[in-house]
Amino acid sequence: MYNTEQHISYSGTCVNDVELWLVLSCARLDYCGIALLTIGSFVPWLYYSFYCRMSPKIGYLALIALLGTFSIIVSMCDRFSRPHFRPLRAGLYFLSVSHSMSVFIH
Image (cartoon, rainbow, N blue to C red; front, side, top):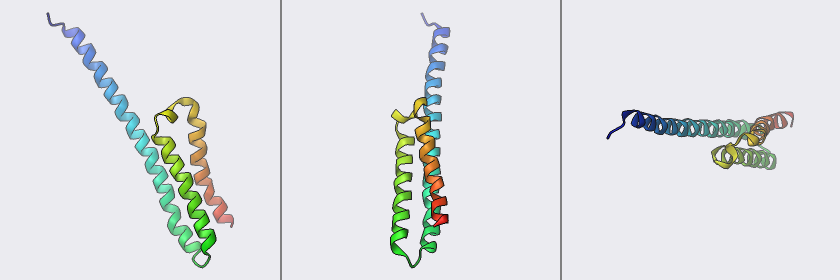
């Protein structure tokens, strides 16, 4: 016998799982895009600010690339998507954005 109630319930569970996976994947890609935009927005600013001074330019570019790479890794890994890693994720994003203040002061 075909039980329609059981089939509808099972279909709803599958759809909910797929929707949850899709929402989480889109959120991860959103965080990854924010990190890439943060890294990319620093490159021209640093290039023209330190046009004649090569060592600070390379140092600041390396630091923002490192912070951005860590932010992307943390946002894309399943292991770091748990709630108790929220301070780590927020701290990495805060560090990469506040890095601009150190460059501005320099």
